[in-house]
Image (cartoon, rainbow, N blue to C red; front, side, top):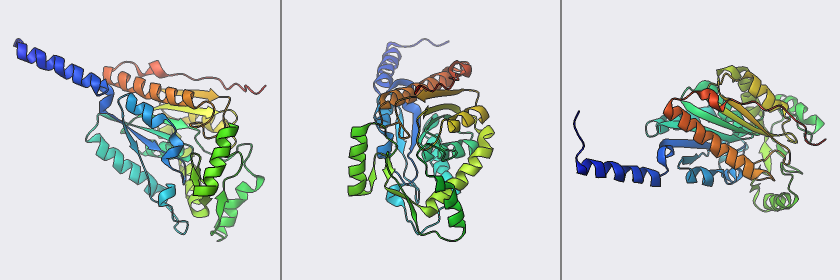
Length: 303
């Protein structure tokens, strides 16, 4: 075996310090961020910043006829095209990075599940307030009839966001309401969702419900027990049906649907970053992936 020269030793030490400055082993890991339907990256709160601090490369995505800035209410989008855009990005990232993960919020979490079911290239998936059914306590009784209206050919309408805008924190909710009135978009997404885009999202939900067993990536779910848009049952169904060996759920009790900017946003950010970092470390060291496995029982903290 050849011995190392003093120059080689200095180069190794210098390289180690350089790697540490750049974020250690996580610098080779990319994290795709998916906001909610007709939303923006504002929704992701402090997650991008903290992922960067952890040494991950953050990839915020905007998608035609999914993101607010690229939405045309006259166009009928295809949810599979949304998936294709993300899948193409994953393929390109895999040429540069060792591993790729996805973090999605609301319908972005559902989109992440759709991609994870169709791709084996993901290391981990973080699902924040995932939606498999609009069954929260603030969803109007006529919501289910909107699909019937759409299928009858009445499609030039939008579903308007209203109180509480997915936020329990009163001060934040007031600021969001002001931003929606002024700019049409805020940290909770757009002021309204076009009918055609909502219908595409519902079709994607239908696919995801059947495809959950195909999801194999390490999966973290964070959901509020008081989610006014999607009840805790959404998270429970995902946890029970996905094919992931590593699956974990965290229940929140002091926020609504947009957990990234509400009262427990720091918990959401910290748990997201921690899960991805652990997944990277376990993957890199080839340790037992069961180390992350955990399932918390649902506890209603309102009582």
